[in-house]
Length: 114
Image (cartoon, rainbow, N blue to C red; front, side):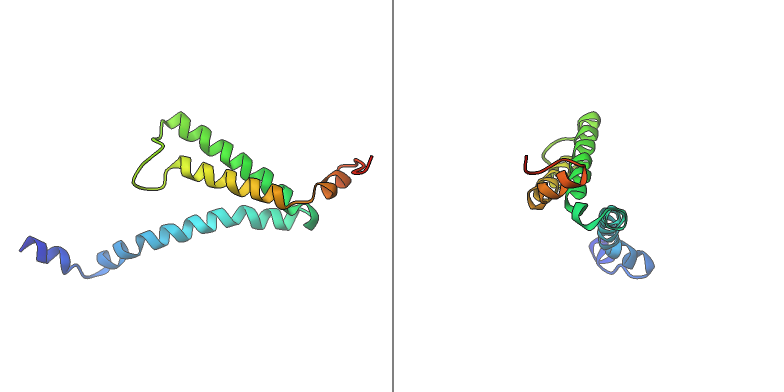
């Protein structure tokens, strides 16, 4: 009988419980996309990828330091803080590989072809 009651969950609590993972995912995506919109609004187009690279590497360093400080296990049944740090590092390295170093050197006042 107890099993039936758990299956017949209706009302606002059942809907809220069912939507909770999707709402958390949406909040995570928005919080991850917000810095990209800020960078896109403030940085010239030529420096967008190098800026994203620096921001992602800094986020990876902060997440890994926080995971180390909190003693988070590296392997678990869900996504851990270490996984987030690795994803940020991967995004940072990919953005750095796609950016043009000559544009960055010209912007900071160096001659790319000495």
